Structure formats: structure tokens, C-alpha cells
Image 1 (tube, helix red, strand yellow):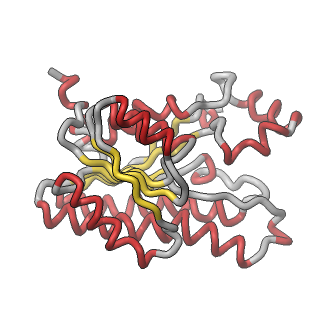
Image 2 (cartoon, helix red, strand yellow):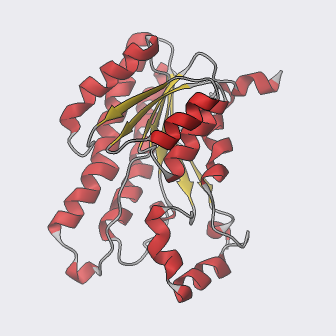
Amino acid sequence: MILDNFHLAGKTAIVTGCNTGLGQGMATALAQAGADIVGINVSDPTETRSAVEAHGRRFLDLRANLADVGCIPDLVAQARALNGGVHILVNNAGIIRREDAIKFSEADWDDVIDLNLKSVFFLSQAVAKLYMAQGSGGKIINIASMLSFQGGIRVPSYTASKSGVMGITRLMANEWAQHRINVNAIAPGYMATNNTAQLRADEHRNAAILERIPAGRWGTPQDLAGPVVFLSSAASDYVNGYTIAVDGGWLAR
């Protein structure tokens, strides 16, 4: 049966930045599909742990600042120890800094690039090495953005990082598909999360954004549930290097 291809029973998924928002929604969706979750966060993911365990799945709480890539080998080793292997990685952790490009600081550039791009590559590299050692392939899902396709305004380092995420998704897929490792990305549209609180609070920007979205609403974490389960499952075994926009039609406008 085709629906069997979407089941994730017996799988372990690492989800970074899953204490709130989109990461929490994706971790919960993967647990609903049968996966145990390893959450990597800088703060306590109490709600996420409860949601995962409510679906009868295990949750391993790991704390780290992924901008320091030196922590990655130990994190992967701990994740592997939960069930003896890792099968899914969702690179969701990220930050945004807003300022005019003419005044943007080096610190704000480095902070965003280190977490949003550098850590994504090196965590993916470490997990890919594990997948190759396990010999059974695996899934890597990166979280891109509308700003992987567009320039945006007042977010120079975020735009650079998310454009880079789409690029390295293709690069890693090209090199690792031969090992049955699927590397793909999800590009959320305008989502009602902490990152967009400032935009949604601005009456004029909020109205301008909603006017362009054919679906007529901001997205929610639940809107990523289907795409992340698909890309984590056997149903996507022949999907490589692709970025799926989940944007209510924003890019089609």
C-alpha cells in the first residue's frame, strides 16, 4: 500500500531548533509518523517533548549552540546511541537579524551565517558519514526560505545564508545520492512564527504580504507536516536536490 511508504516507525530523526515554531511542528509530525526524535536546542523544549511523547515516541533532549561546530561529533554520537542509528536529519535551527545593508555589522553577518549555513553543512557532513557507515542511506532535509529565491530587504546575512542553503542542498545531493542519501530542502513562505512577529506587528507590511499570498493567510507549523514527512520517508526515495516551496502560492504570484 502506498501509505506504508510514509511510515517512519523504527526511525530516529534529529531535528534542530525544535523547541518552538516550525521546528516543533515538524518534530511533532515526524513523531506522528512513527519516528523517535532527537531535539537539539539552546533552550528547554518542554512542549515539543510532551507532544512527541504523547504520540508514544521517545524524545532525546540535547543542548548545544550549533554555531560552534566543534560540538557536532558528540551530538551525532549521542543521537546514534538512542536507538543504535540515525535515519533523518532536519536542519531547522536558524536566526535572523534585521538592519539596512548600508549599516549591517560584521557581528550580525557572522552570527547568522555561522548558524544558518555553516552549521547546516557540517552537521549534514557528520550525519552523512554516519549514514555511509550504517550502509542503509538516509534523509537530510534543510530549511530554506523565500529568500533562497528572492533578495528581500534589511536581512543581508539571512538572505545570503538561505541562498547558500539551497545551493549546498543541491551540492550534497549530487555527491551523496550514490550512497542512497536524499538531500532536499523545504522553503517555508511567510509563516506565523517568532521570526516574523516584527513583520506581522507592522500593519502596512502585514497587509502588503497578505495581499500577495494567493492563499490569503500566513502559514503555520502544521503546513510543513506533510512535506517533512514526505521528504523523510521512502515515498521520496527518488527526490534529490530539490527545494519545495510551502508558501501559499507566494512565488507563483
